[in-house]
Length: 325
Image 1 (cartoon, one colour):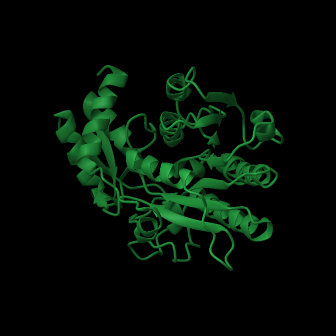
Image 2: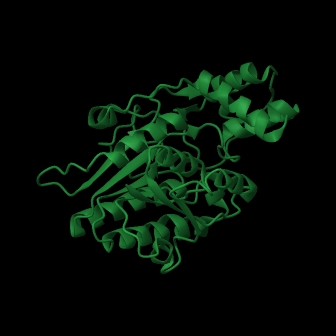
């Protein structure tokens, strides 16, 4: 298959591109390489992809008019895997325009590109557990309304789902939206807690911890996410009669653990104790994320296999190698 992948130099995008290439697919990767976090890490990911057979990279901003069409260079694509986004809950408090630009305008541009792409079989796009906010009842089910996100990031991801549904209803565009739950792992994002905690513990710095460490997150290893992506990309979309061709799945570990649990796993992997400073959390953080994954399990056998302790041990080992600590 020929895959058009946005966010190819991002955390999940890099792992998805690697898996697609290993499975014999061709990939055109697009990424703007912005400076939300150190672009050196994005370039290091990209360096492991460039030069491989069947991979082509284009630096482009998906929110710019004509950027996607230019990147496609007239090629035919079977599937669009849209993972590009402005990530992060807290950064939206300072730079909400970045989220409007990437997550709303950019998502719309992907929809238009997909609608006009002759022969396209499927558009698969990333959403987020942040759409659920604090009002949802755990475990979070896709049948819940999810119309009270507490962060602007979550609001833009929910808006993207609604935009996608309208294109499915109006134009018959076959789509699958994936609500990712706290994805972590090798080559991850430096703005996320597991990375920040690991860095602080290995350097002996004080670790600021919000909410007395009682916040619960459904930590999901990137290998489990990528396994699901491969199954979805490679399986023809089966449309239900009388329904718009749009579906949404939770992709989480379905086993939430507290932030203190996370710290203890990092301490065990690093062989060092954390120096904790208790502090109040910023606006936009939810109390808990907890995925009901029964729909994804029924649809394509989604069954996470990596427990948090094992995933963190692997991450700390990679982090030591990457940073030389």
